Length: 182
Ligand SMILES: Cc1cc2nc3c(=O)[nH]c(=O)nc-3n(C[C@H](O)[C@H](O)[C@H](O)COP(=O)(O)O)c2cc1C
Image 1 (cartoon, protein in one colour):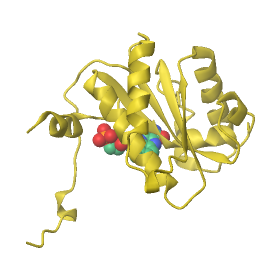
Image 2 (cartoon, rainbow, N blue to C red):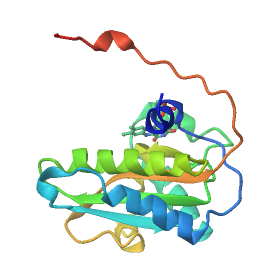
Image 3 (tube, rainbow, N blue to C red):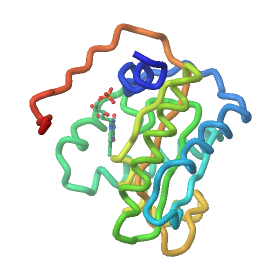
Image 4 (spheres, rainbow, N blue to C red):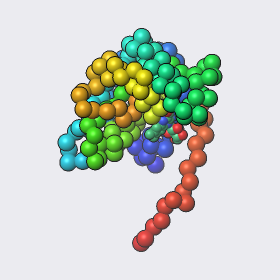
């Protein structure tokens, strides 16, 4: 297995972080891995907001909880009642990816998110894609401004980032979804 295959296979979503801050240099390298993702017609209709300010991350968490409370989405409504709940798992940094609403931009941002996760993991930094953070805007639309999301762009996902204790992660994948025609 080469280094890239190993990183792809070993990367896991991390939901417990050390409080240690990631250096500005590492955050820059990680977010820049995002912009090298394949994207339709190389139009790059995406935007990346790197948040390492604890107060802003807390504001994002509170806005997400407010949105979930009103969402009627019972899975998440149950989650936010847990005392340890935090949308970003207390990560010291979060990258928010937004995009213009065009046919392939969600796909583009998914590829960027995976690049970010792998680049982080290559630096022993854990990550978790947080789709549920979309609720932060439903009751608090001013979060678009707080997060410098460009006009006519919409939230696609957030990615929490932080150092973590290495554990033997359990993850299952169903290989029955693959067919070969040779
Ligand atoms: C689009 C998307 C949205 C996700 N949203 C969340 C989320 O809101 N909260 C969370 O804890 N994990 C979230 N995840 C992480 C998945 O739960 C995780 O990738 C999956 O369980 C497989 O585990 P692994 O990443 O460790 O291989 C999301 C993943 C994707 C791709």
